Length: 74
Image (cartoon, rainbow, N blue to C red):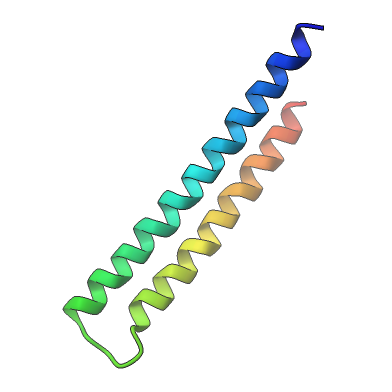
């Protein structure tokens, strides 16, 4: 019985870590896009849009990869 609550707590920690990784990835790439837009101005803030979308795609890839890894560990 004591094994299950500890394993459940471990899963919560893993998913919380995944959330922070997503925030960091999207935030960092959005910042890079914003910085590029400030150095090379354009009409549509293209660098911010492109790097933000790239951040979302990479964050989703990381989540999928980690969830698959966690399911293989079981």
